[in-house]
Image (cartoon, rainbow, N blue to C red; front, side, top):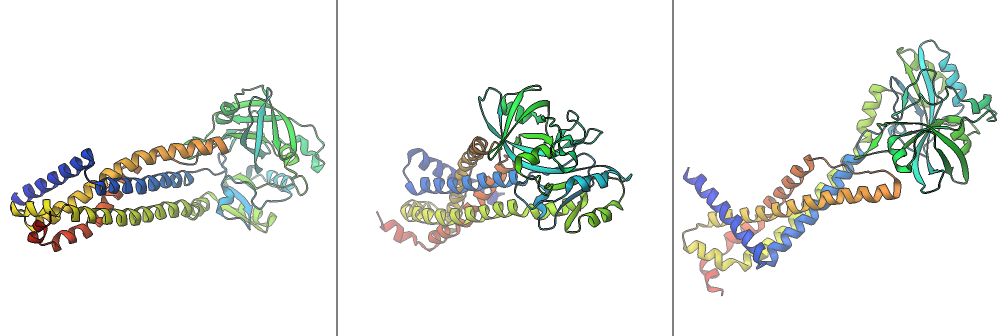
Length: 411
């Protein structure tokens, strides 16, 4: 009990000494230590938020889809929303063959492309993720948007001539509609490179596709109409193929139709997702290592200088009955308190960094890439305390090796 009382007393004294120095700015070393930890934790918190956002689920999905067919040269990220990856060819014909199979509920190619959409009044133009599909007879949901308002089939394809009637239909999720300030029935102009086309907003649906803390603006259109804009008509290209079926035997048929592709099941997608998540995990790990290394080196140096500057006061404590072990404990507690204070400041600044990052990426790209989770608060403060604990080894050693009489002789 006496030992616990002594420990609380030393920790309380350490807290009062640190706060007293910070209030009076009598010690530049303590203030610099707080700033150093705050900067390290700010960087770590911001990067960790970005890593969380990148690790968020943002795959091309459809209700009841059992297989995703992607080019063999692609990685697992091909199933995620991406533009510019290797593509599949002859997709309309392959889809038609699959759709005639009684075991297949529906199949559709998906081409994804960032397009610029502008409302009829030209008040703004924004980047939106366009997904070109072949809407099935029974409405479903692709990229988090319902296909109900789109005409089933792909009339503009016209057996590969691409001279059939354009539907000009486009379905937006609520994020895209809000970004453009449009609603159902409004006209919009889509642009990709030098290609432009007019579309009518057939409907606006609440979307589920998100990146970080914000939804991704999405537009759903007919595949051939997007292919015409992107120059993908030659070869009938798409990024992937979605197949809904209850039969496991369909997989071998798909592999036979597309011999140089990867057929990913829902279970396989989860396994592949683990490898895809290695990048966000690596980002978080690197930010942690950098924060700890920079924080430890900075705090150890500054608090070592502080111990040298405070030797006389430590000697006075020794004369009052504080043993060397108690003085070392006092220095350790002070270092941890300093680092923790810096950690709290860093968490606040890091949260601001996350929202600033989202504001910048939303302005430039139309999406938010960072995610704030309350767990980051506890994580960052714990890392700051760890920095203080490791950093305290050096100043504690300086306290142990400084003789009391030598310290008293310095004035």
